[in-house]
Amino acid sequence: MQLLSKTYCQYLRYIIMRTFLLICLSLISYSLSAQVKLLTLDELDKRMAAGKDTTYVVNFWATWCAPCVAELPNFEKLRVANLKKPVKVILISVDFKSKLQKEVIPFVVKNQIKAEVFLLNETDQQKYIERVDPKWTGAIPATLFVKQKIRRFYEQEFTEKQLKNTLLNLK
Amino acid sequence: MKKLLLMGLVLISLGACAQTGGYKVGDVVKDFALKNIDNKTVSMADYKDAKGFIVVFTCNTCPVAQAYQDRVAELNNSFAAKGYPVIAINPNDAEAVPAESFEKMQAEAKGKNFNYPYLLDPDHVVTKQFGASRTPHVFIVNKTDKGNTVEYIGAIDNDPEGVNATKEDYVKNAINNLSSGKKPVVTSTKAVGCSIKWKKG
Image 1 (spheres, chains in turn red, brown):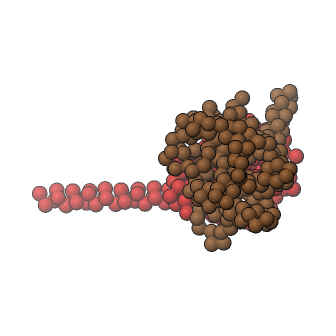
Image 2 (tube, chains in turn cyan, brown; image 1 turned 180 degrees about the vertical axis):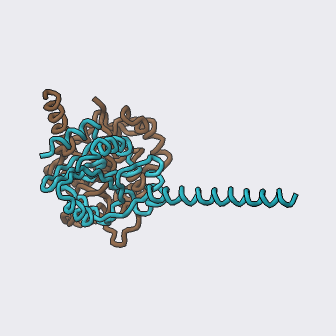
Image 3 (cartoon, one colour; image 1 turned 90 degrees about the horizontal axis):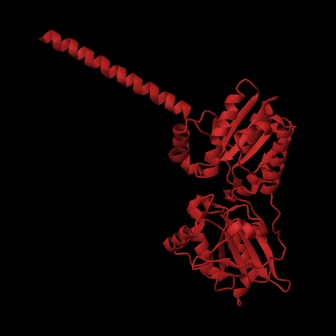
């Protein structure tokens, strides 16, 4: 009887340990996959300047913007289609900074977004909108294509095909 | 190849759409006659005593526009009596976004106690004339001998989230400038907003 309870206890302990380990692991992978960092435009420029021959497709979006959310899968498809090419898709959310933990990260987790996601760390809209592109009126979605000296800005929604063609015709 | 060319053309025309012409500061605004949520038609000419208008392109569904609803009502409270009433226009197409329908506009205005007209702009005619690109998007016009002249285009303030320590009330300041017979110091600003939901096809 005593022996039985001893093995039972061991078994129970093993189960608890295992569950604990599993929870830990899933927590780690959760936080890794859902990392959304803050990003200033200076940091973005620096990043793109270091990219050399990489083409950057930078999409400005927000969790509250229905057309942005609708076109996000097209950016994911573009990312997957260009995995072996020097193409980088960067999604920059213009959500309020206070929404990072409560809205943006849960959104990224829920929609399993694999592209790099940042939250724009700028306060002065007068400066940053103009700096991204003088043509930008502030409406989103908006997308910037950057390949070294080439900069193309579009204040519009993109279909998968339009994204592909814009990338191909970037000159 | 033909397809590619066509695609390019579509892209170019889309790009052109995004930067619609519209009014610039100093332009004279053409009057409109749009249906209000009470089914009556509203024109600028109806306001005999007005010195000008705060025309706000806003809608039911945009969270940024919603964040500004109270501030728009406050603008009307402060400035309608001083001769600058708010006229709100919904630029969105109800077929593209059902929540922007006339009935939903009525419900929104009732629920949020809109104290100003909230007009429907079918086919985006007035929206395109103004060149509104997002919600909320404000145009301040001032009555002059030439007509209703655009004096300011842009945001209500630089604090959508209510956290900016260096808040600037662009619209209030512009109206205060105009009220004292001066030109607005800041005549144009940019802000993040929701794109206009254009009619499909």
